[in-house]
Length: 118
Image 1 (cartoon, rainbow, N blue to C red):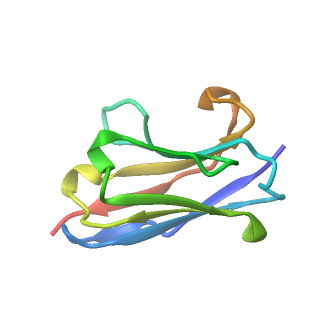
Image 2: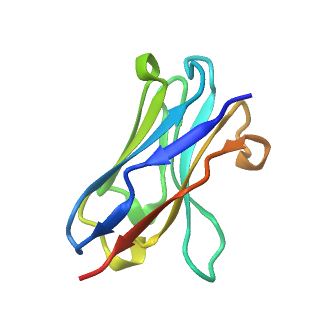
């Protein structure tokens, strides 16, 4: 079992940047799948970016070239660097981690709000 705690959300103007962090309660070295998901009001939760223990990454088309996912095994932390933010990026962002490709079988954090607005 692993507990996940997100941080780094907030209010930012369009074009701005934020870095989200997901701190795990134990070593993430052997955790196969880690990812960021988001849910906007009235919409389903969607994948933003994912990274495997081997460093393979996957991004939603809507964030390619703007967001970067990374993981620091020494700090038991995963990150999401978000640049060139747009109002449509506004959502609650959730951290997910576990041994399965399907995030529904893995562990979730409590979420952090990101609001992009002028």
